[in-house]
Amino acid sequence: MDVLKPEPLCEERYLTTEEVAALIGVDPSTLRRWRTGRPMQGPPFVKVSESVTRYSVTDVREWLLSRRVDPAKVA
Image (cartoon, rainbow, N blue to C red; front, side, top):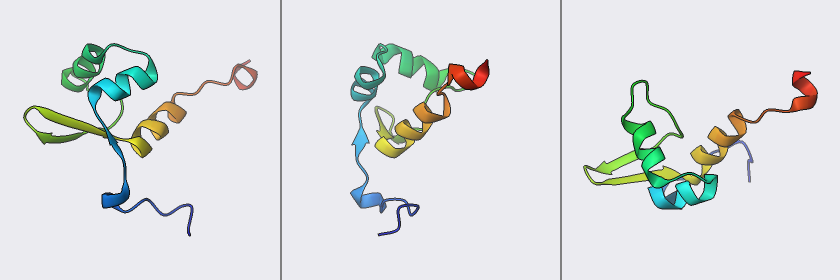
């Protein structure tokens, strides 16, 4: 299996706003505000319908890693 190849869409796991909020330790309203603010913030999301939004586990992980700060490298 090629580790650089993305998971097929049907095999990717998607999380609700509440699940992502719990995972990263923020209130669900924070994610909603990030999605609707200008400029938009937060992890990439999929707008399934007007009332259904999902987050790919892979996207959330990559978003978190992109914000990682290593104090040893900053100093």
